Image 1 (cartoon, rainbow, N blue to C red):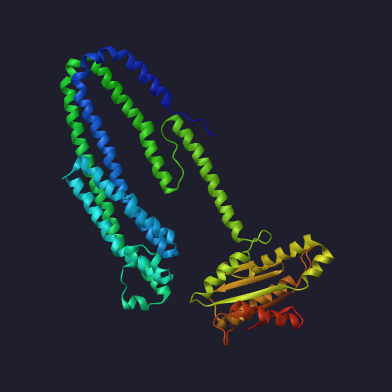
Image 2: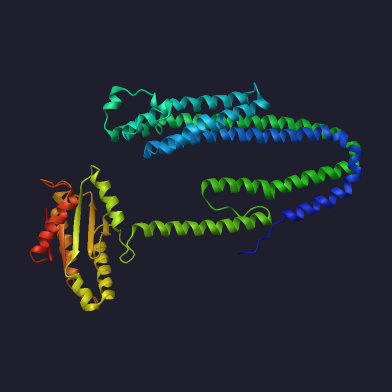
Length: 447
């Protein structure tokens, strides 16, 4: 960790204590005359913080509702609907934000802008009910378990006649299209406008308080000058080394990035510690995601990843091919050369497959000596191209590589656009694979 050079918060506090003791006796003479200014400044700060929190809460609550409805549409998880209505009907951060702001700014432009943001957010709820009702229909959820506004939302005959997939697509479009996002942007703009009005109002009040201080300067003399120097100096110092860095920290944490090394010594230490933990967690997450989808020995995709990928392509419209591969007489290799050499053979098979196939194709190890390849964006018209690749694989593996013995492969191939398909492409490819094995191995066949 590099040496940090920055002012310490503790130093500022000690300075404040010493200076305060020096001017304490002089402050008694002028405290009542300056009390009005202090009270107004404190009130402005409190109002600003309260109003800022209220405005942020309204926008956050609106964004939260959008997040939950989008998650429900994508996953069909009833928990997201429950969270949506918990925010809308119980937590009520939007309504609480309006109530909080009315304490200070009832009847002002800031209040009007926040109410407009609220109206826009409430207006989106009908679209969100619509999207959730469509999603519930698409996922075939029990209507009686739906929240009342969603349950009572009437879909059109055309919407009810759509396929489940089209219903999900329409539901997602409702809460993510340009009109919806435009309304979300309007909410954000209204909240920003509200904050600008509040900042202007607070600024005016602070200017008024400043005038009160100016009228007292001559009478306060040394005590007032010392007090101003103390208050202004400490306020600027704390803002520079504490408040501003903390705000940046908050923004960076929300954005999921590392923290800048700014501000007081203590905050920079906190930032370095956080950054170390953050970077370690990022690396751990990458490693865990990779290990979850890849075979530890050959570094290609594992069976779990293969099953997910195959389901994805089986449900899609794009053409693809499935190549099923078995290493011939692999048990004999293990028995003759040992399991360590057997592992090297498997790794070599995976490496050769990666060399011959495209980076966009998915090479998977789905069993002990079993591999599978999902070739994307190919049809039966590319059969000759695939034959060339498979022959190149066979030719390379037919030659020993140092201590790694030669190995032959039995392979079965099926295209997604094959004629007279069976119940699944996996079974069709597997069927022709076993036909190759029954006819002497060391070759390939197409379904």
